[in-house]
Image 1 (cartoon, helix red, strand yellow):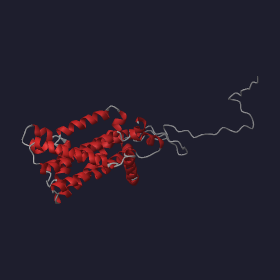
Image 2 (cartoon, one colour; image 1 turned 120 degrees about the horizontal axis):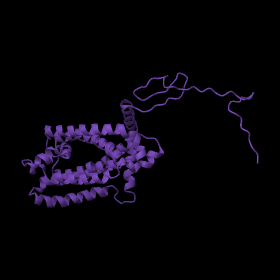
Image 3 (tube, rainbow, N blue to C red; image 1 turned 180 degrees about the vertical axis):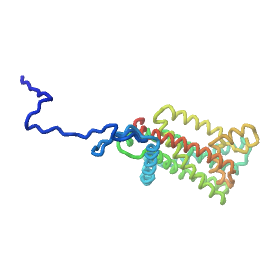
Image 4 (cartoon, rainbow, N blue to C red; image 1 turned 30 degrees about the horizontal axis):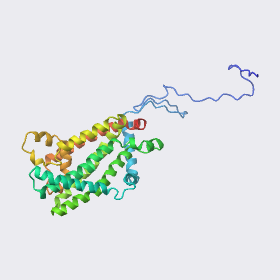
Length: 320
């Protein structure tokens, strides 16, 4: 058994290299800044940052969104692959959703036109627009936004990508689903010989607002549902309730002159956002009050979503 003698620390042997003198950073060398306490010296290479303030967090979130815009072609490619993988091995692929939507519109149109004593010629285009826009974009965007990060947890852990790209991927995917579901609306309009006029161009700014709102919802619910896994079922239940209390299968004219119509129409954000898109396609002009309501709800959503994304963006990778 061999023993190794230890040399006292204070003993210096001739020939040993002199210990390197490393620059030491002290708290008095640099003052505290808004982005945290920075310990730095002119000859030092180590910068210790205690934390970022709101200006730094907002700048990082802005760079994240800018990177997503730069990678927009990748977002479209990934969204297309999501749809392709979802219907892999299927004969009709995503058109199964289109076919099921058409059958649902035909069945509900026949039943509810008699139930509400409404002319089928006017009710069927209204119902087709409402169901396609609600089921294939609004509800799909909200529910997919809840799992925008959790379903891509492997990608988030494997490589560095902007967090907002996953939310944009969810929105673009539902835009593609809506695109091939428009076939049902075209068929119904052709059968009823009802075509939108020039007022249909008013749907373009409404759809642009929908895209912005869809992105905001995905950023907000994606991070919130990643932190609290009980939220997605709650959101699904809320959307199901909103389907029945919003004028989707029933016309808003039914409750226009009734007291409950003030709550279900004037204070319903889903009605305002749906009406600015649906009314122009039915040769109707949405009122100024409807546009004001839709813009007000959208502004509130953007503020809440923006504050949450700025605050929680750096933590999402630990939540998924």
